[in-house]
Amino acid sequence: MAVVTTPGTGTGARRLRRVAVPALFLIGGLSVPTVVTNVGAFEDRWFPLTTMVLCGIFVMFTLGLNIVVGYAGLLDLGYVAFFLFGAYTAGWLMSSFFFQIDPGIHIFDAAINPDSPGINLSFWIVVPIAAVVAAIAGVIIGAPTLRLKSDYLALVTLGFGEILPQAFRNGESIKGFNLSNGTKGIGPTNPLDMGWLSWTGVGKDAINVFDYKTRYYVIFALCVIFILISLRLRDGKLGRAWLAIREDELAASLMGVPLMRTKLWAYGVGAAAGGIGGAFYCVSLGGVQVDTFNFQFSVIVLCMVILGGMANVYGCILGAVILTWVNYTGMKEIGNSVNNTFGTEISVPKYQFLIFGIVLVLMMLFRRDGMLPAARQKHSREIDAQIEKIGTEGVA
Image 1 (cartoon, rainbow, N blue to C red):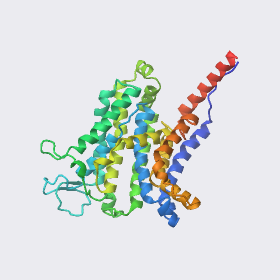
Image 2: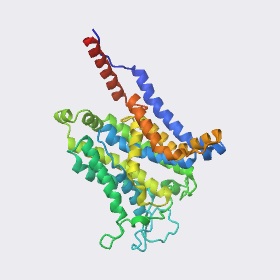
Image 3: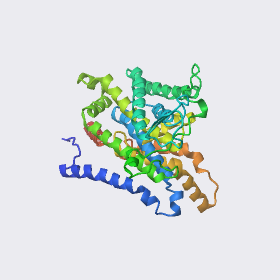
Image 4: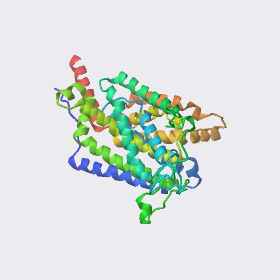
C-alpha cells in the first residue's frame, strides 16, 4: 500500500534557513555598489549602477504585485495604475507644478530655489503620502471587481490599467484645471533629499543627480522595509486568509474569511508598494511622463512574479533582478558580445519579446512554480504527483 508523504525538514534546518536567507540577501544587496564599482570598465558595460537602481525599483513593484497575485490569487493586469498614482503624487508634491500657490509651501525639501512656488515637500514625507494615495486607488479599483474571478478579473483590471493613463494624458484641462499637464508631463521635480540624515549632519541635504550609489541605498532600504512587512503579513492572520482565498475561495468563505475585506486589503497593500516605487522612480528621473505608464509595464512585472516564484518573496526578488537586468543591460551586452565574437550584426534587443515568450513557455512546461517556488506550492505539487502515481499504479 502506497502512502502519500510530505517532504519535511528538521526544526534546526528551518531555523537556519530563516536566518541564512535574509542574511545573504542583506549582505549581497549592501555589497552590490562596492562590487560593481571595483570591476573597472566592466561596471559601465554589464552592471551599471543605473541598472542596479532600476532593479531595486522593480523589486518594489514585484513585491507589491506578489501580494495581489501570489498571496491572494487575484490576477491583476492593471498594476501600472498604482505606479502612475505614486509617480504623479511625487510630481505634484515635489515641484512647482501648482505655481498658483505663491509663496510656495516648503517643508524640509531640497529645492534649488527656496522661494519657488508650488508644493515642495521632502521625499520622505511624500513616500507615505504616495503609498496612501495608491492604496486608496487600489481599494477603489478593487471594490467593483470583487465578484469577478480569473479571466474576468484580469480583463477588468486591464481596463483600469488602460483607462487611467488615458485620463492623465487628457488631464491638462479638466474644466480649466490642469491635473497632469497632459503629454508634456510634470518636471523638473526637486532633488532626492536625505531627510533627517541631513539634519543630523550624517547625510547631504540633496543627492547629486549622478550619485547612483546613494540612490541605490535609498531604494534598497525601502525594499527591505517592504520585505519585512510582506513576510510579517504572510505569516499573520491576514496572510493566511489571503492564501485560503487563493486556494479555494468558497471554502475560505465557509470557514468565516471575510472575502470583500480581505481582498481589499490585498489590493491596498499591493498598491501601496507600487505607489512608493512610482514616487522614487519619478524623483530619480526628475519628472514624470504619462507615456511611461503602458500595458507593457504590467506584463513585465507579472512575468517577474511568475518567473521568480509566486508567493515566494525571495523568488520575486530574483525574478525582478534578472528580468530588469536582462531588459535594460543584458540583451544589449550579450548581443554586442555575440557580434564581436562571430562578426555578425544581430540586434538582439529587437527580439526581446520573442526571447521572453520562449522563456515563459519553457518555464510553464518544466518549472511552473518559478525559479524559487513557495514551499506550500512546491509541497502541494509533490503530493499531487504522488497521488497521481498511486492512481496510475492502482489502475495498472
